[in-house]
Length: 443
Ligand SMILES: *Cc1c(COP(=O)(O)O)cnc(C)c1O
Image 1: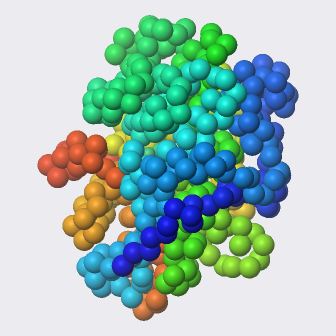
Image 2: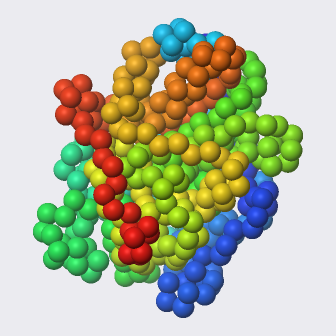
């Protein structure tokens, strides 16, 4: 069973949650002065329209016609499926639906914001976009966006992934992007980390610092971020706006689930539904799923922290493990981040979104069960959402409840087969965080 929509049903507006939040966001701080950052400073880093969107109080922001046409080209609207075979295998009375963002041409939701960001940069006359990537999904999406829109793209890719996932790098190269392993010797930040350890595995926090330093050296370049920021989460709401229309062909959901790295695919599916809860119209339950190796929501603190390890970004009030947190090398590279989107942090604080955390072996267990039942091999990140959906469906069975579950399948895992191989051969390790800097006063 599935629901597909024609091209005309690609949303015409993104939903901006800022005016509907239960409390206003705390402003980002300038790392030099610790005062709210001046928008002018942000304009040197980000395209102008994105800085405006970051602070916009407009509830609906129009999607440019050109971006909607590109959305159609890359596979939007994406399908919504009912996981009927998974339901049968679980013998649950629950009904399980999922929105499949793996159906886009780059294989994940990241292209939804990459196209918008590249569009506004090009319109402003920017020539080059620079970014970081962990597992490679975001770098791939921005590389394609650059190719479609006519911008050069440079990607700093965490060295561990650069070595473990050579095919992601090839994909970025096919789309014409330059890819450097991070830490690299091209930036001061990179050289600092290399001096500590010449074979440093890198991480998202370091790669972000390198990308920003690179941009600050080139007037015609701007930085793009793949998650966390308000405008990125807003671009992703096309997922939930489509899903709302699709699931209503069948019924109303009770529970809405997404995995969380920085929070963008979760927000993309959930925020259009969160809106109805904030307005008192509906009573959905929201579950945000993270890895136990990077337990930002379940073990972090709510505090001002840097978005990167090199301390170049503004400080944001968010759930964080501390920017010096060492994220263990789990296969869900897209979830290896110390912080969390500020808007999602507020919703967690207010109990509107409930966080849960899982270990990677139980997540891969759920992923392979899902693949056998539904045919789709999920990205290890997305499999966190699947694990939560299965747990809720099994609880519904015990309680003989007809729960309606909707989760976001944020990407496919066809370039993550190394992780699956490790799992199938019993080589996968679970990691308990050794030391959480914020809890030890180290941050
Ligand atoms: C990047 C990524 C994530 C995590 O990032 P969010 O911003 O939290 O969505 C999840 N799933 C996939 C497939 C990704 O590529």
